[in-house]
Image (cartoon, rainbow, N blue to C red; front, side, top):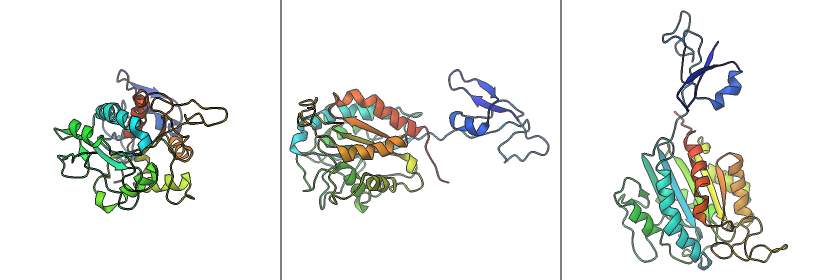
Length: 309
């Protein structure tokens, strides 16, 4: 039996003499070579052609991304909020439209990371005005002719934990995505990206909640296609940057001080272990400098979209 692989660089086919089970995760086996018609005694549905060549469908590449930001709007976040609005949001949205083979739709929602009682709705307003999304929904879509302006509007976040809760961006994402008011935001055939931002740490209302429980609850949002979720935790890295640790941490990062986000980083680590996560360190320079890693992580998930028939 011959196994034919496809090299994406140059578009050439080649015969490979190694165990197919070991090879399969790394190749796009597109039916290169072999006979075009099934040979005698070969079932056309058995994944082989008449020449004994294994035929494997290429991985499905996503054309939709649902991007949720849960952002800590507390007073200490003013510099981060400005950077998110002016630099990160526009650059990230432009980059994501080109992932995979080009997106058909990038859907974006914004939510309060404090998520106290009554604070689990997506935002369609800024600190000073309604944003009038063309979707007439609580989220934006890249098909809108005013997508960039809508992004800049909703990115002008209200300062302060508007809903009265504590900073808990990962837990807030769970609450928002399970709130019936936001039904329809997450699509079955999309990559869901959660970007959770705080300069403190994850402080769930139930202080006994573990990183594993938060991780499990996020994955439960897409049952059966959990691999289609990417989680990016944005917070202080090891030691933070507030000068209060021993040995002393840096006095501040590019946006002032940030506490070490222990619990948030633990949640990120669980997704990183799946190849579906990233820690975006507020103490490690400008946020936009870390955008390439974020985009690559999302692109990896996009190129390996899981679809359940």
